[in-house]
Length: 212
Image (cartoon, rainbow, N blue to C red; front, top):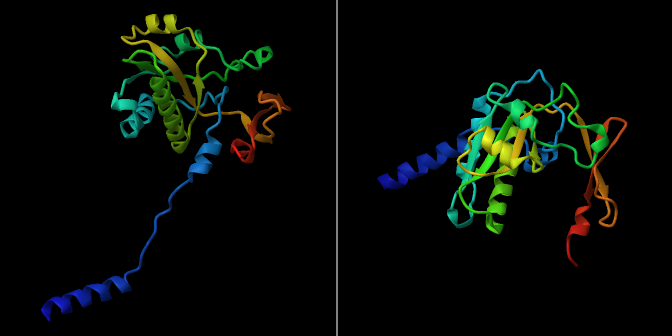
């Protein structure tokens, strides 16, 4: 009887409690929409090493092929060699006439992604997951970024005395460009372009991504 009494009182207490739900923050869709490829950044915003460390920390939560966890990261800020990275990367490959980034809008913080394992299909998967996850974290923290695949790997490796080869570079900062997504059909051009100062990114409508 004593046990039932305590049990009933506990249920009565729970039924009277006021439940307070905390805001869940931005949804995944909102983070993904905000996670655009910025090639121009606001120079007033400085990205610290601690911010870059927070981005790298998400890798401890990510899946990894065979759990090899082969990725290593070199953090570069304005004080530790951002100018070297800038001299060895190419941005806006589809808009060569613009010579991006514009003077004064260059990114000043980077994460150089290296690998302790030889190149393989599954390593590419790991690198993609890592890059996207770190950029989503950057958006959550109020920053933006860009995945850079066009860079002089040899010079980057030598300049920073990297013990492992670089496979990808992330630029991190506060984007100062206007970017819009444009829904297109699969047979239309996928090339991004600029229109009246706005960066337009064509995206195939989801209905056409499904194989019928």
